[in-house]
Image (cartoon, rainbow, N blue to C red):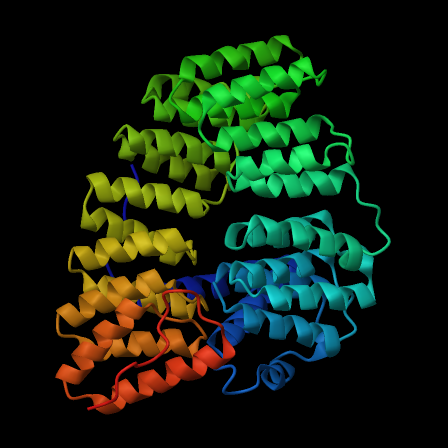
Length: 513
């Protein structure tokens, strides 16, 4: 069983971790490893500078020139910084500024990966005009850098946030003006089809298929994409009906086809049907993959069949399949669902012993299990372990932890989490801010709530209207009108530079009194 760390301040843990890292460098005999670690630190440093920068009040590019000599830039460095900015929820405009900096101030050759990350950051925040601007600029440099993945990233977010007609218009614009000189064929059609299928917009997907299949002759991948779409709706009958139609049309099922069908059954708790397809898959000379077995382990968890899950997990080596973080996460999830959290902790330890790094899913699953069964001290211990390992949790985990800390009146832990994220250059989600501010205000800690809100705005992120109105009420009651004016001015200025999403504060609607 995991021995949890004794409670101590998060900042002490961070300092301890940093000192340990320095000692590790001193004893590392491989100079290449030292360079790698130093490069990692430099990536984190630059990403934090960008995240913390008060753009647009202060131009970002002169700051970048001061901290990053263009001669020191490399393609991999640019990719990694953009990756950090994406993970840190940094405002897309700042990432765009960094991208333009690398474009105009250095001789680094752009890579498709850097472009894809930039597009992902921008479209996630619905900055579609800037995404088109990026693609149009790349056309002038090297059109071959725009990939099918680039297309998929942009179209997926347009389909999510805009209309069916606008998504089709975007596809047409890409064909005629962006992917110049490229003959659109089945691969591009499959991208468009998958966009609607992954959004569970099957009515639109079928419309696209009927409208365009004569122009783009379909292949097995097309059929699998549609099958995936039906699976995403959770309707097993639709999955099986389309599967039989697919076979009738002359398409031979492959491993991906079987994986999709197995997943459909497993998600509905029909483990026996999933295992039947698993056997059928083996008899059809479609070798099950690690993904197939991982899906079945998840299915055993849905069915609360921990014995079968262990059997599947332990059979992996005999099938010559090496378990990865995904397989461990599946088994950990089963154990958490079945309230066997101590065994789940042992698996996390086993992962680390085998040098398989726990990822965001590992931490989220473990925190969920510990909250349900072991209480605050276990959660605190695992949280401190996460900090010791320098791991920055995903947004949904941050929100879950903040809700747990604030809901159980551990406001100092909530503030510790907030401070840790800012120290790591990550900008927390506005839902996390809402939870923290609500709890702080309700316990009379209005100054700290005000400070957290300012930190959020300083990093170029909007706050929700309910959070602002709560702060407005408490600041008025406390007679802190100057602070309220300061907050209002920051929100209005932010609105002129960064388009807010629906539901975000746009400043005061009533005069000060």
